[in-house]
Length: 381
Image (cartoon, rainbow, N blue to C red):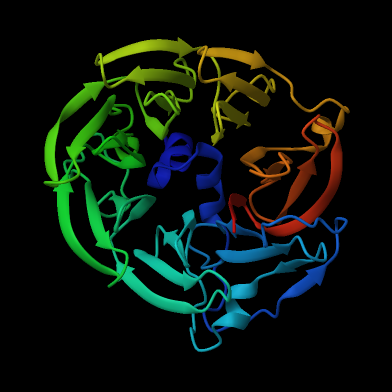
């Protein structure tokens, strides 16, 4: 049970929780940014991308990196340089990140806050305090953030339900809350409704199995829909269907991928396929997976593409040059909306710096770059 607690702590991917037992860094320490040039110059309308490094839980080591398409430079740990007056830097466990308008929104889980940064300079514009916050989505003038609400605690009798907070993106003020299921994670907004993937990650072995539905205009809880246990990520495709990942129980029930149709209120399809992270690119859902559970046989380490129109898995190995063997733990994925290049992060051992790998649309590796600890989310801008 102690090992299981390590895997499910804070409801994150199981292996991330293993990093919670490293020693803490001095909160006042400022690390200067480091610049490298891993790739060739790419002249497109995108300026670059940010990469969020989660950092080991309890160590206050979340960090922010930036890549420039103009000169192919990669700058590590830019938050400290952009915000020298913030003593503890970005915080403890950077869980999610998104760009919206002229702002970059960073959800810092165990620091109980959402950092709002200027998209161009990464200077802090504001902070919203939300306990045990997890994921963020946007619609119109509002941001919506999931929260576990209660403290980090593994307890099968946990009774603190989570909530979704609504934030005015102009004023950066919270304006409403709606209670949902236990330990809500991924969130998506589609056709005026908010959909929340409840995990129940603190309640092992009594995981949640529902998606909560909220009317966005009224911030009113509509109901729950049963999908699968320990839900994680959720995204809407171009047809309004929801793609939802389940972590399983890390033992006998494997990670799966579900397709739910809100119009008919039915699960259209489920795939016996592990998902650690996914990225919706047009009508394709790119997925990566590594070490979702206790198995050491490597079967969870996969790279796949799903056609969201046909509801089919069309590629189970999109890396074509054999370099997937160099990726220890595939952790995050993103696809450049212009060049269609594929970016995959490698968490490696969850303690030392990870790596970012850039692949051509054909699956050939172009370059690799050292990152911060546990690299995960990528946001293009």
